[in-house]
Length: 100
Image (cartoon, rainbow, N blue to C red; front, side, top):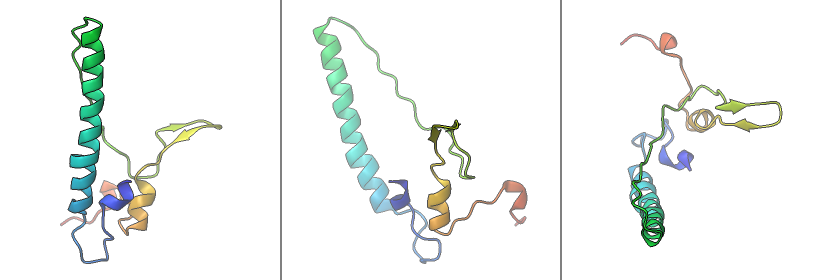
């Protein structure tokens, strides 16, 4: 999904595809979160439970190809590395970026 959020660096378009981001975040995700929260509150109310709901956003993604979890039999990630490379945004370490 992240792949569709960014335009190719060589396309001449803005880097972020705002229409896709808006559609996914403000329509799909928002509706899904609202549905989940409403169902949770409804279930808690039926059980006479006063339940606070906490949400946590994404932390800092690593675009350098590292796995979040890596074992010999199971891996999670890398999430952004391949997408950025395919859209012509290769990863550069901060110490490799030329000074402005």
